[in-house]
Structure formats: structure tokens, C-alpha cells
Amino acid sequence: MAGNQLRVLDALDVAKTQWYHFTAIVIAGMGFFTDAYDLFSISLVTKLLGRLYYYNGGPKPGTLPPNVAAAVNGVALCGTLAGQLFFGWLGDKMGRKRVYGITLILMVVCSLGSGLSFSDEAKGVMATLCFFRFWLGFGIGGDYPLSATIMSEYANKRTRGAFIAAVFAMQGFGILAGGIVALIVSAAFDHAFKAPTYAEDKIGSTVRQADYIWRIILMFGALPAAMTYYWRMKMPETARYTALVAKNAKQAAVDMSKVLQVDLQAEEDKVEKIAHSESSNFGLFSKEFARRHGLHLVGTTTTWFLLDIAYYSSNLFQKDIFTAIGWLPPAAKMNAIHEVYRIARAQTLIALCGTVPGYWFTVALIDRLGRFFIQIMGFFFMTVFMFALAIPYNHWTLKANRIGFVVMYSLTFFFANFGPNATTFVVPAEIFPARLRSTCHGISAAAGKAGAIVGAFGFLYASQSKDPTKTDPGYPTGIGVKNSLIMLGVVNFFGMVFTLMVPESKGKSLEELTGENDEGADEVEIHAVPVSGRRVLV
Image 1 (cartoon, helix red, strand yellow):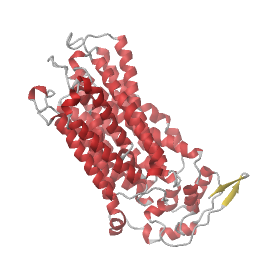
Image 2 (spheres, helix red, strand yellow):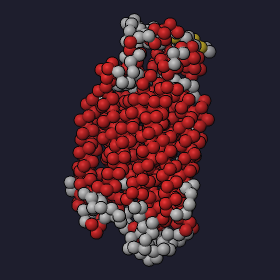
Image 3 (cartoon, one colour):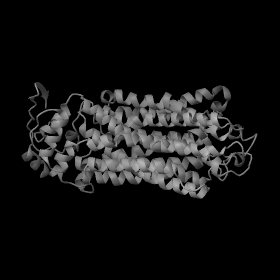
């Protein structure tokens, strides 16, 4: 360890796993629970929105026009991209804690606003829904760099990867919760308001009360975010920001003395020395940053971009894939409420079998196997399973093989989450200097959301049938689901290639990884300090 390492930071690096670690995981993780719930719950209700507001009396129920569907699915992702860049930058300028509450307030207000979309006409409802979902995404975007940075700066170096991954793993529970809430709400309405199928009664298949279903599902996302606001405001600023960026050694020592329950002394001379060192003064657009971290930033941005093309296109359009293989009945054979129930059931099954377990495999193994190995392995198996689904696609559409398709499809999600979906979030929070950490994580995450936008908009059109008679109303012919899956397999392969640019960060302190304390070669003494009758390593 470099001789300039502050003892307050060393204390965090070597601290045993304590209650404050789990508190930080829950506080930061509930933001990601809400993020995932809000971003993915829209896919549960888009079919219902089409039936409610775009009924045309045709042989198939109404569907959202292509431009409206693209806006509803993609506008939150656009907001998220903007929020990641803005709040990532702001987190380095103002501090992680000061910005953390703003993102949560935005998420609560805009979740409620999404369900209170004004007017009963299609244009008014869609316009206000898109408005609130953009700003909801803006708040969600801020949560990415801030939660990752806060957790990485609080964690010890031995289990840091698991702690950051655990925050991100709450996404899985958010996706699962979205499906469960939709199941409960749709089942309750289906029981209370009986309706015929669309084929039996086109108008009667969509009862008036169905308009409440999508509003309740979207508004529920405000609840977990609101519950954690108080605790977020109680968290102290991270010691690494306070000491290395704000240059306030005394406050860092006071804050971490309370958190770690040890007696830590302020080291103002060391903070001053670090502040004037060459390794602590280069900016994001400097040649020195390009020399030290330029390749790393290219690696984290490209891998996250490529991952999210595949991940979000598959996740947002699960319902279309399940319909294409016949796992969901044709829309005309269901009423509006039952269709929501069937889509939610399918998404919940995928989340339960593939998504959630994958996240927690990463949590359990990331500090043993390393980030690099898990990311390469995840991209490799995603490539394999995508091609295994795509090349014999006609085989999977046969009724006898549909369960096999769902199993294979679940495995792609398992290896996305026990793979690059988790590691692309973890690594940018570890390998960049404290004064640029939140910014660089925001840039990496924004590249990912750019990939998500490509996936969401591109897959919407590309997955349309090559047969003009089988496309959704208003859509041009596409390349079909089979060729779309082949394209996603190729994207995953390139993700594996660009992973070679990302360094391994397992088992090292943040300052070792970033070179912030390069000056000096003496070892920092590790000693025991007695506090309240016990001895704690610092």
C-alpha cells in the first residue's frame, strides 16, 4: 500500500463486514429496486394501452402505433441517459450525498405522475405519460453513478465487488416485483369485471375499469423509493469524497469514526500532500487521463453499450417473443385484463428462473472469480444461447418445443446477470479516481443506455415479420425474430472482444487501482485502536 494512504481510507479497506455495509446495500439497493420496477413495468402494460386508446374495430385488438410505442418504451431510457451524465458529473462536483436525495424525489414524483396522466384521449394520455417517464428516467439515471460510487467508497476491498453487485442485484427483485404487482392487480380486476374475449365481443373485451390497471401498476413504483428517502438523507458523505475531493480530512475522520465505531485522527498534512500531487490534479479531458484511464473508459463504455443492446431489447419485448413462439395466446383470444395477466405471468417466470438467480450468483462469486472472468463468461454464454435460439428458430416454434425455448431464453438472462449486466456496473465504480469516479461511471452507464435505446427502438422494427400480412398495424416489414436474435448473438460476441480492454479490480484498494496515492513508498502501519472496550483494526 502506498505511503500516502490515509488511515481513514485504510480503515475502510480492511474493515470486517459490519451492519453499516448491509444498511448501505439496502438504502442504495432500494433505489435500484425502484429503477428496475419503473423501467420494465411499462412492457407489462403497453398492450393494454393499445387496446384502451387505439381501438380500431379490426380483426386484432388495437395496438400502439409505431411512433407512440417507440416513444413510450424509449423515452424513459432517453431520460436515464441524460440523468446519468448530469448527476454523474454533479456527484463529483457537489458530493454524492447532496445529490442522492434529489434523484429519489424525482423518482417518487414522476412515478406518481406516470399514473396520473391527464385527459382521456390518446394524444393527451400518451403525451403526459411520456413527459413524466422522461423525468422519471432522469432521476433513475442519477441513481446509477451515485449508488455505485457510494457503495464502492464505503466497502472494504475484500468484498467490495459483492457489495456493489448486491446493490445492482436489487434490480432483479424490482423486475420480479413488477410482474407480481401486475399479476395481483390484473387478477383482482379480472375477477371483479368479467369480460369476453376480443373475438367474441370487440368492444366488451376491454372494460372501462381496465384504465385503472396500468395506472396502479406504474404508480406503485413510488412506494419503495419514498420509503428510503429518510435513510438516504441520514447517510454521511463518503470519506473518499470528503478527504480526496473536498480535502476535508477532519470531517472525513469524524464521519467514519461514527460509521466504523473507531477512533480515527484527521491527517490534514497527508490530505494536503495528496492534493498537490500530480496524480490528483489531471482532468477528464487531459492527456494524463487518456494515458492512465483512456483505454479503461473505452472498455467500460463499449461493453456496457453492447450488453444493453441485447439485454434491453430482449427484456422490453419479452411479450412479443412469447407471442411469436405461441407461448402467449393470440391477442384476439383474450380480453384486455387477462392479456395483462398472461404477460405478467410470463415475465415473472423468467425473472424468477433466470434473472434473479443470475444476479445473486454474481454477488456470491465476483470476489472469488473476478470481474473479468465473469464478464467474459457471461458474454460467451449469451452468444451461445442466442445462436442456439436463433439458428433452429423454427424448431422452437413447434408446440412441443415451446417450453425448451423458454428455458433457453431464461438461460440467456441468467448469464447476462451472472455476467456483464452486473460487472459493467461494478467495474466503473472502482477503476477511476475519486474526483472523476461518479462522472466516469455516469459516462459508462450512459453508453449503456444508448445501447438500450438502440435495442428498444431497433428491435421494435427489426423483429417484425418479413411477411407484410403478419406485421403489427402501422409497422413496415422487418427481418423477423429469428434474424433479430442472430444479430443480438453477434452483438454479444463483440462484447466479449471489448471486455479485453477492461482491467481486473478484484482485491485491490480503490487508491491502488487509480494510482491516486502513488507518491511515497512507505507502508501505512496497521494497528489496533481500543474503543469502548474493544479493539478494531484500522
